[in-house]
Length: 569
Image (cartoon, rainbow, N blue to C red; front, side):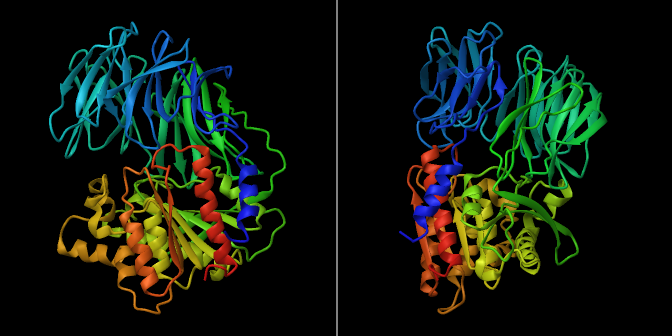
């Protein structure tokens, strides 16, 4: 145990005294209350329905409100099963034979049965909730099938190589085909389709009603509120709300803005006619706020915060502008010990949101930063494409440019800088640290597939090949070899300069194998570096209990404190 652990442990515990509320769905809320280790289901007035052992990933209330279909995992795993919760008694009946992984449930209008794609078994399942009878229809091999609400009996999407076709289940009418269909939802007597190019409104007869897109915007979600479609999106690295009427943009505002903290809206939804947002910031715990039909949002009252968040726009080596949000203690002047976090992939925005580790690190006197890199979803499709596939090295270069910019700005120094990334972000952080060891003192990765030459060996690795540009050609393999953190680590000469390394593996991870992290640690040690692996035995890539998240966050903070004081080098 280091000299910093007890102080950081106490600071992290203080920062965790908050809940994480969810948006209402059919009169119920899936969220974590203050003091609870995991999420549970509650009514709008806060009355608990059930907080089962394990983890509830999703809820789907029945039309009559008596039952709630849940996606339930007994451990911190994304692989789940269907459960039926009786809302009055607060009891759950699991169906272990109906195996799910983020699959949408469609209830019959009379609430007596439901349909769901059991994606782990490639089957379309109908469950009679009164008798427990199950009817299972196998799906065609190689076809991804999804269900969405809409029409009288729901919508069905079939995805094959090259695109997805959406049809009305009641009439079998084809509504359209899109290269990448993300979700569909009811829009009056039509259907709203969110795809990789924007939003389409289509009639139930397949007619095209309107189309909206903005190449500089990444759509997060869209919902129908009165006569408008309200889009939650990210533009120029900030969350925005865009109001559409018949496909025409009639308003655009920042989803959440505050002088006290860099607030971000992470979710949007309408329940019982009320539009609500989930809003949070680096130092502001998540809150649910309402938006009026006139477009006004009542933001949470912010008390005195222990720090301030500033956005820096820094130059990349190719002239592009890169953004990073930096949170520092009130009145602090640099250079400060800095945790620089990143993601930079799959078109997913990396935004400043609430993490207890931010407040704990600020209390320790450090700074915390959220870097926005090409490959992510902060500035639309071109931004994502610039760091995708064969251009993935651009993402790593962006992180290095942001680190240099923060050093030049006096925010930190190389000996005070620690790069941090999880999953794909861990790949980017480790690749940057090994390419530019002079820029940072340490790097921490969590559940990262660090061997880019063997992605297929991970449970879901085949789905990541396009992101890294692995098309199987000799040229691609050489490019991957140069980018791969593990390949670079295993090629190091003894005595090479390398940053200190902490590799975190998740004991219940069904996405990423622990093997890459263990090999990374061994390779850096052979070169003479300081490297260790830490295992979060009860953690997975999905939902995790608060106690597990506490230990994981504490491991990163303790490592960063040791590195930036020289204790780990």
